[in-house]
Length: 472
Ligand code: NAD
Image (cartoon, rainbow, N blue to C red; front, side):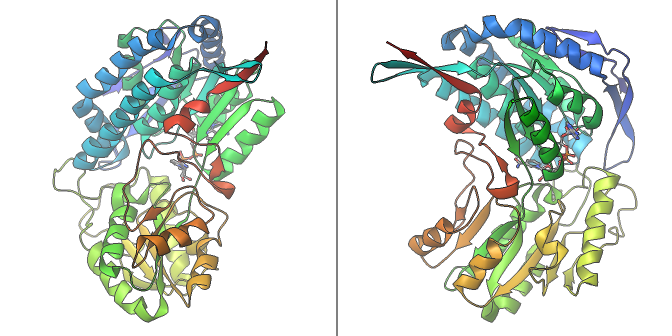
């Protein structure tokens, strides 16, 4: 078992200042596979001081100078892809195939996209008699969750460094090992000391100390809406820039005339991938009342393909959820849905019989779900699909827009134009039209309680910039 006692601060691995060991548990075996330090506010002070000390000189580099270590970092992500996949699979539970393609593959695509963007980005423009400069926002606090642990790190750290900011990263408690691997890659890439720093530990201790730190200029947070609200309040008091990527309860709307079978199959893949721990997951399938039972039967068939199993086995499509806490939460929601009158189509709250060890949840489909039920309103973050019936398009829109969230969604129709027309009326940050692919270069973020700001692509880079006008 690896027992780590250090944090990456000021360009070196240093002993944590008083941090007790924090266990890292493999959710498939329930075994402790490593410990990392539960950092202290003293670690945060040291990391922020290092980031502050490096901010002016790193912020004054040219984009060509920044591209050199950033390119090495991207190449490191490529070279250690297999190790990244194995690390995420072990600490987070993703099946190894999914971990290789998505958990390790997506960050590489995102990093490569940012290299290209940076190479062509103009940090200066002329507006009448003014020269407008895009300058780095300064010291960035990056706080990330465990569901796509490396993707969320890369989606913040790479654009922040590309913009000329310095960073203190606080990764999720459950997935610190891939964050440490990322720090090793940063170290090997030759960034100046202090440009990137990593402090592992509890959100309520080191996360909170980081957000409140007076020397932090910008907080970029991905996680739950409850924590996001609290962070927004603290950041607001400190007049810090804040970007919040929060929860979702996305609707997949199948309009009459669409390819229902394809829409339901893609929905199942979307909601059961990563054991449902995807903030953009289409957790509500909205179908016309005349096609309702057909959709329920299709969903039952599709769910059968996602039998949970050992994430280390290459054929496994669905692993466990990340922790016992998450498993209990998901099971609680399934029970609440049934208690409120939903019909169990497949799955259920019990552990899969053949998997006594590990935090497994059965892929579950609930029918006869109505918009007022908790399973239709609240984020479950597990492999649970709720199917709702609508009467007509207006009713479908009312249900789709009827939660506090607005992160993603899907629309399927007989033709692109009708689907696009419907999508324009949805209060949400991303909509997939007739199965359009996820685009990691397109802006990503939420309406309503799903967040503030955008990640990915040009919009993501610009989150880390501030403007200065020189009047000539
Ligand atoms: P969480 O909010 O509990 O934790 C996220 C991060 O915040 C962790 O690193 C945690 O340690 C830290 N944290 C917790 N309390 C803190 C505090 N008081 N101050 C500072 N930091 C604190 O969320 P989670 O359980 O890790 O992740 C699941 C949630 O994240 C889901 O709700 C999901 O929808 C959301 N999520 C959103 C996106 C998105 O892009 N919108 C992506 C992934 C996950």
